[in-house]
View 1 (tube, rainbow, N blue to C red):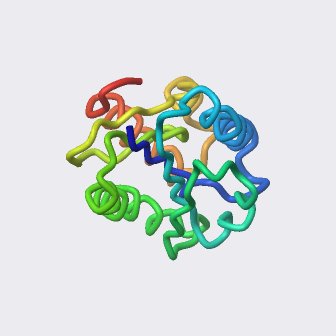
View 2 (view 1 turned 45 degrees about the horizontal axis):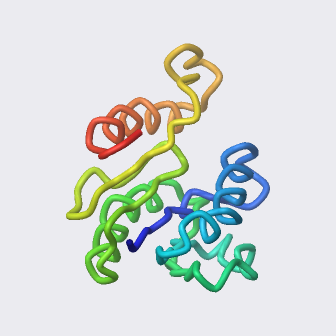
Amino acid sequence: MKIGINALFIRPGWHGGTEVYLRNLLRVFPEVGADHEFYLFTNAENHTTFAGLSPKIRRVRVPLRAKIKPLRVLAEQTILPLHAVRLGLDVIHGPGYSTPALGRCARVVTIHDMQYAHFPDIYPRGQYLFFKLFIPLSAKTSTAV
């Protein structure tokens, strides 16, 4: 199975638990999925921080900066599905609350919490709107949550 993993949202040192979660997954995926191929979609800010992973994980650098969130979200919704077709992916995993809404392959999303729904005032407006739109959309369009 060919598995794509979205790391476009990672800005090293900014994401706390979701970054730790992703990096831990990347350590164990090659062991538990020995027959699978993994493709990690990275950005300009994090590509080098993912050096030294298992040779079973191929990094695919997408030329964007996670800091520019609207472009990153657009890339996740457009560029990732195109890469999925080009690479013949069977599934894309979104470990950071969202996954492409459209695409030919299966999609799996990790939703770490629902704080945005219970404590909307703790988020900057843009982040709150992102969560409010993309968490339900990703849950609805994904094969597994």
